[in-house]
Image (cartoon, rainbow, N blue to C red):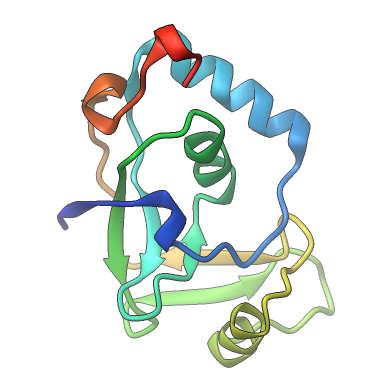
Length: 133
């Protein structure tokens, strides 16, 4: 499985994020000085499947590029985190196209294979620490 470098602003989040978790994740990424985990997006629509908090961090850091895996729902199963809630790819597509977002941790994407890691220096993604971004 291969990742691609995409512009964060071209990706469409489908869930809200927990701001506290975004700040903690941002601190960990800045401390590591590397981006280690690509986000998973739907290959045609560029809707985020997994990695909403990482996308929020990338936007906060004003990264020009972000490693992303291009996937589809033939190889990815989706479930709801909360019991009794129903989530399907069709519901996710409708929500994303409407411009609305699910609450944080609504959708759980289950991947057929373990997602690869990467180790990309933040500077290669456009991070400029001198400008705070």
